[in-house]
Length: 519
Image 1 (spheres, one colour):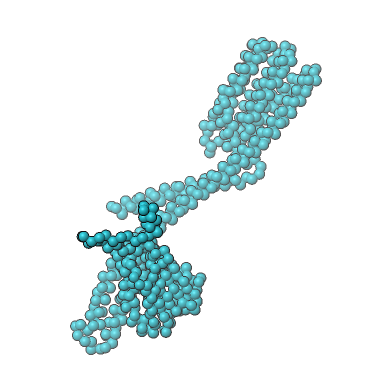
Image 2 (cartoon, helix red, strand yellow):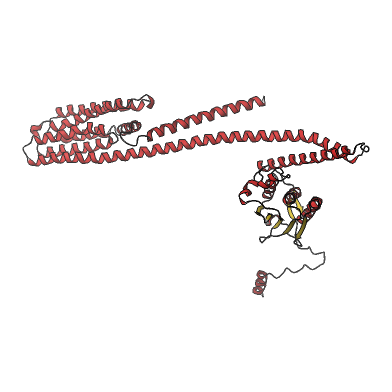
C-alpha cells in the first residue's frame, strides 16, 4: 500500500511539474513573440495599448460629462437653453455609446478579442463623441460675441487636451476624437471677418500639431515600457522554466540518491554475509587448524582467497564510507585521543609492507602534544590511507616521512611526505574526486579504487579541519591534514588539596597591571 501511495504521489508531482513547465514555456513563447517586433506597429502590443485607453476611459467616465455641464452653463449667456439641452443630450448619448463599447471590450477575453475590429469600433465612437463636442461652436452663431468665441476656443482646447491624454496610447483614436473639434474651431473663426480670430484659428491648428507631437513621444515611451515589461515577463518565464527543470532534476537526484542508499545498504548486507564465511573458512584453511594439507598448493590458495576477501571487504567499507560522507550521514564517535599514538599504531601496521618494498619510514613527532577531541576510527583511517598511498607509489629505496606538530593557530597537523614520482599539477583535482586516479595509478599494478584521498578529505572536513595536497613531478608528494584549535583539549590547572594553599596565578601582563593599580 505504501509503495502504491508513493507511486501515486510521484505521478501527481510529475503531473504538476509538467503543467508548471508548460505554463512557463507558453509565457516565454508569448513574451518572445512580442519582442520579435522591433519595428513597425508591433501587433502583439496593440491589445495592451487599446486596453490602456479603455481603462483610462472607464476610470474617467464622469469627468468629461461634468465638463460638458460646465460648458453648457457658460454658454447660457448667449445660446438658447433648448439648443444647449439638445447639444448636451447628444454629448451624453455619444459618451454612453463610447463607455458601452469600452465595457464590452474589457469583458471580452483576450484570446477571443479581435483587436483591429474593436479598435475600429472604439475609434468610430470616439469620432462621434468628438463631433458632438465640435457642434458647440455652431450653436447660435449670430448671438456669439468676442467673449463667447474666446470661451468656445478655451473650452474646446481643454477638451482636445483631455481626449489626447486619454487616447495617447492609440494614435488613430487620438485623430478620430480631436480632429473634429480643431476643424470646428478653424471653420467657425474663418467665417468671422476679423484677423484676430484668424490668428486664433491658426493657433488652434498649431496647438493641435504640438499636442500630436507630444502624444507621439508619449506613445513611444509607452511602447518602450511594454517592451521592457515583455522582456521582464520573458525573464520571469525563463526563470520559472529553469526552476521547474532544476526541481525535476533535484527530484530525480534525490530519487537516485535514495535508490543508491538502498542499493548500498542491501548489497552491504548481502556481500558481508558471504564474505565473513569466506574469510573465516579461508583463515582456518590457511592456518591448517583442522589438519595439514596434503598438497602445499592448497595452503597458498587459501591464503590468496583470504587476501582477496580482505581486499573486497576493504573496498565495500570504502564505498560505504564515501557514500555516507557525501550524503552527510557519517556520524563521528568523538572522544579524547592522542594523535601521536594513532600514528604510531598505523606505522606498526604498515612497517612490514614498507620493509618488504625496501622503504624507510621516518617519524618526526613534536613533544608534549595534548589530546584532541576526535573520532579515533576516522583518524586511524586517515593515517592509514595516507601512509598506504605513500608506500604504494614510492619506489624501492625511497623514504616516507610522518610528521606531527602544532600549527601557528594552536591546532595540530599530520603530514605524510614521500619521495615518489609526484602527481602532475593538472591531475590533482582528479585524484581528489571519488574514484579518480592519476596517470601514475594506471601505469602501476597497485592502482587502487581512487577512494582513499576523497575519504580522507571528507573525514578531516567532518572534524572542521583542512586538507592540503602538495605535489610536483619528480619531487614527491606531501599531504597535510590539520585539526583546528577547537579540537585541541587544553590541560586544566591542578586542583588544590584540602588545606593546601591555592597556587598563585601566573603574572600575565594584564594581571600585573591590575595589581599595580590596586597597590
